[in-house]
Length: 159
Image 1 (cartoon, one colour):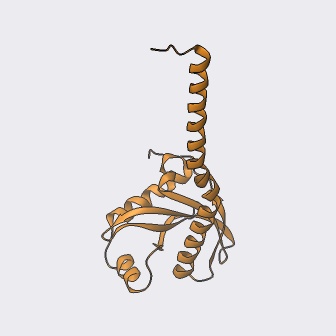
Image 2 (image 1 turned 90 degrees about the horizontal axis):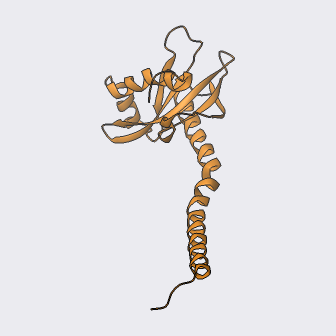
Image 3 (image 1 turned 180 degrees about the vertical axis):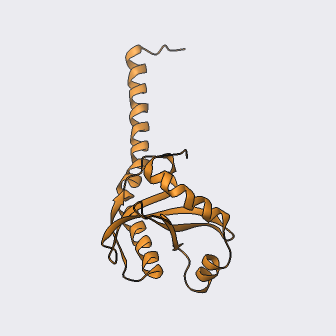
């Protein structure tokens, strides 16, 4: 049985690590490259829901960074409220409904006296199904997220 010298061992080890780094680089690059388009397209989805909620009142201006573990299920945006001339936030969160997980959009106004969080609608539902899901019955899961949204923006509470 032939002995492997230290030089040969470390050469093989370095070659293996180089291949491993290359493979991980190939896997990670598409995620990093698509991050901006993902954010832009989610912003467009939020804008579409806000236009269906109150046409022309809200305008999505940019993304908000959320440094909490919940970011795997949501994205936040700054929104100009043209009727009140102020800036509010909109958040799109994946919540569970009768039809499976759907992206729901909430409007968060920290300066509001009451109703700081308003449900605007579901991003992937339109027309009759959207109306039925939105207005038919109170949804405890939607109410849970309405109570949770201020904690997400203000940093209070736990995830």
